[in-house]
Length: 299
Image 1: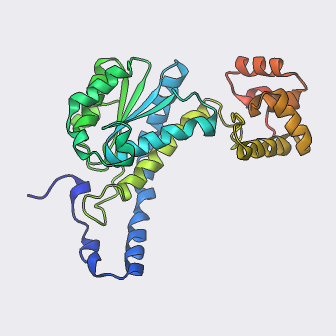
Image 2: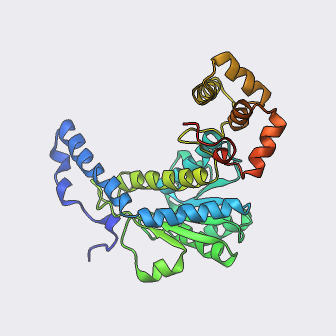
Image 3: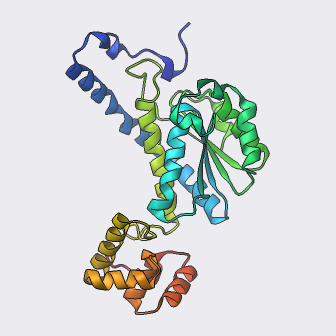
């Protein structure tokens, strides 16, 4: 009997991939990859729902916690690790949990995904609660570790969501607060979900965290104004943001950043309104961190 999971089926267009030249393999994979954005686009309403859930969690002091195994787990950890440097967010806001722990990030621990009780234990260890949004990533839709984690998260009062790249039953949709299911089709190599399913996962996670951070005021226009200067590259980017928005020279931008203790958003308000750092921070806090509410449209 054929496996009902879309991720495990054979792709008829790649039946003979083992006979193709290098160029033909690349062209075939590229043709398949072009299906991914369309599949993700069809899930836009569900992704937006996940953005709302993540934003809601953050606004009440909760967390977005990704849970996955294998490639799915690694992508969750990757997305979580990129939020602090991109948006100046506390590292605790977005967290990634992978079956098998740190070792599974660099070396496959395939059997680690088979134990739902381990996923449940991870939720207990994180002290998951009603303020949190736990988002499981299981492209096949069946990973026991992930479903064990989500079941325990619900027991502990958290909101829950699931990403999978196979067909979704009505019962599953009723089980979680949101289910995102980009149907990218069978992989070029049957069952290798690090390919199209992995690409779809990265796109979805990008949208969830970026959308939530934008809604929290971490972005002004399309600029990363909640940067905290921690490296030469970031210092340069921060100075250029201030130079563009305030129409000032680099020396003046550098001086503002120094007075703002390296925080771009604070420096921007200081330069726009002619106030000191303490006053700038107070006005930002009063506006819920939304720069536009303090300085208006400068784009």
